[in-house]
Length: 79
Length: 226
Image (cartoon, rainbow over all chains, first blue to last red):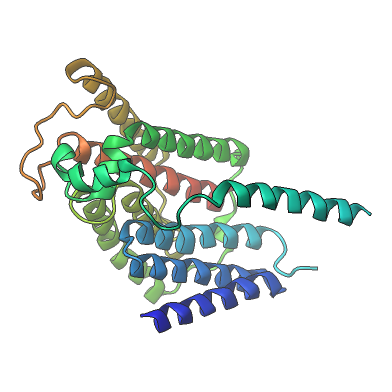
């Protein structure tokens, strides 16, 4: 259990760093969505399924979609 | 010089927070309220899911405020984005047959799953917000995969207004027939059955419709007119 949680937290940290480092903004959004998805798995493991559902559907799906729409209307690559 | 002042200010703020939190025991039960919800919540509200009993019953007024905040955000986005001109959807290439059919096939099960989540909000994990978000993600799938299918603005506006109206009307009925605003004036029923918990399932169905149509409306605004 503690191994699984530490692995997930490490993955989450990697995703967060990747989201801030990537020049390609679409890749950054996907990395940020991965952070949300792993956060929802952690919420589930910490016995908060209600929060896990909200995090998975809003954080991982809807927010990423809104960011992708905004990026396709503007610049894809950071200066 | 400036960074030195900034570091000193940060140290003062950190010292203040540290002093304020130093006497709070970590992890222990800080208040009696949480214990009361866990012990008596099921009996007092009739909802088997304690999170739901807190969100809709004990803190029902906060939920009404949250729904209002979401409504204002969706309205503001619509006001900013609706410029009147339609985004030229015909220029984009149409989705392939597999993607198109897959989206149409997956859309009804997603809707039914979202409805299941908010109808069973008082029994199993989930509720109006989660179910509404799942329904909105189903609409997002349709917007990405089947470009020619759109929700009707009238229907989504109607669902949104009805959801809000039902929530406030239930609250006022609680004021009329019960003791206070949003008081549970309907019979509690047997715990762990679908028709239990008094007004809780009605409010969660209303919230589900409202959140689902609002988030779908935000996606519609962004994709059509952004």
